[in-house]
Image 1 (cartoon, each protein chain N blue to C red):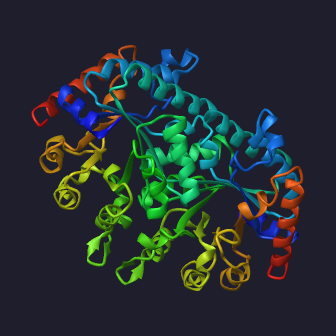
Image 2: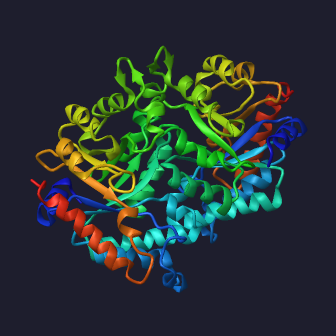
Image 3: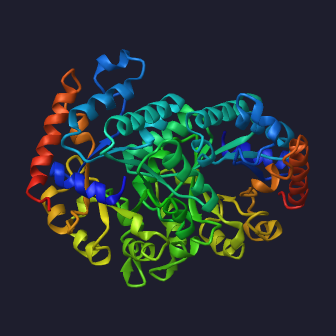
Length: 270
Length: 270
């Protein structure tokens, strides 16, 4: 999916909502546990219930790998289901990968070719040659961690490197990489005031913003400081949507929460 | 496996060799491609041929994920094969994971509980709460990226943060984390001169050193600057061992290369 198609979808649905599919079997409704693939059945129900209000889905690979081969199968079935039934949806493998060049190329192959995701999240610590193999896929998007939403972000990301914070150095450096127009950036919503600074460095790129809701970030603040002419935001909610109910009405409740967020976003969409 | 058992194995085998199992199907001998699980068959042959000279095996997860569900199955079979047939071998999931706390806990579950690896490599960018869920497994080892062997290491890792390089800040900070005695660190062999500095900060921890051989690092230099009283080194070779031959003699040739490295290590073992 091209960036322009994503922007069109945002305008059509009046939403830049991304739903995080972080499926923990200890939290899904018990009636699903008797099905052959509870993770997939859960995702399918959530997707069917929320896709009118969301432009993107983001499975976090950790929640699938924790269940081994079966989990990886559920991930494959989920992305195939989205691509076949909702081709207008932007898909994100939240994998936070990154390794030396030939190894990152294998990760890119895993998520872009084998699983057919539109994008993957990547960690910056190993630098240019660990990210460029992802960017080499010109019709795919690489989403680089910049400033994350957790407490540990202050351990290194906000440390001063030559008079500026490390995350700013990451943003600036990444702009010089081949195909950097295909980058997006992860920026935690719990630090909305940082968005103003970030927009000075990357005015045109999309930002993937986790941390609204369960992690405490304010949607309106994120919009105020983060929106650009293309909208330029994907705001993610995981637990705040998918775990509202753990009964048979879980999908209906998820739909209601997704709709609430879409309604809050509507006034901001450009 | 406890650290003391690993140290005992190093002394017994007079080797601190780690063999990287980075299986690329375009590089394995063609006669294996007709088997049901070529990746596993390749690994099994390499392990059977080299285990007398190696104390650790390190599959890099990228090379398995690139083949989807089947690849993850090959990874699971490989680790099970090692644990069942060579319980004296230390196993490393080279996965370079790292995410917010509850998500890192799922990754830890994937590699420590589900796959039963002894250790996993972890990226530091997201800080303390992204690493501690791994360290919470007290009988497992968490291997933190410090200074990697690729060119991109100079993009951020060697940048100055308050008058010291970022990788030193990572080392120092990580020592304050819960269960930090269970940390090892990735340090690229292509930068052997850095090992002296690194040993000032972490004199007692093990270092996992990739980049000897194919990536250009010198084994003797790494030993000179990196060894400590427990030996404290795992030196990895992947391509330099597993891809010497792509004919039916691949395992025999791998054995010869592993033996050569073991013989170079022998004089250094303490």
